[in-house]
Length: 125
Image (cartoon, rainbow, N blue to C red):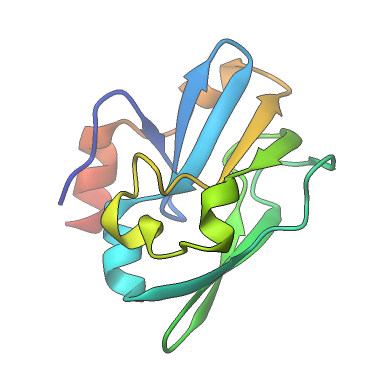
C-alpha cells in the first residue's frame, strides 16, 4: 500500500494535504482497496462548517456505502467535479485526481495531531 509522507491520516482512513489554510481531503489507498469498485460519491456539504469527525459525505462501492468523516473542523469549500462522472478515480488515483473535497481549516494545529504515514501504516498493518 502507498501512504505518502506529505499527507496526514485519520483512523477513519481519510487523508489530508494542507496548503496554507486550505486542505484537500480524500480516502486512503487502503480504504479504496477495502471498499472495492467505487461507483458513486455523494457530497452535499459545500458551504457548511463542520466539526472534526462529522460526516461530510458518502462513498458507494458495488457492495457497500461508507460515510466520509472530516479529519479536522472547518468549512467545506468545494468538491472534486471529476467524481460526478468518474467516481472510479478514487480507485485509480486516491491521492491525486481522486481527491474528494477542499476545505478551509478552522485550526491549523489540529492537522498536526493527525497520524503520520508511518503511524497510519502501522494501524492498517
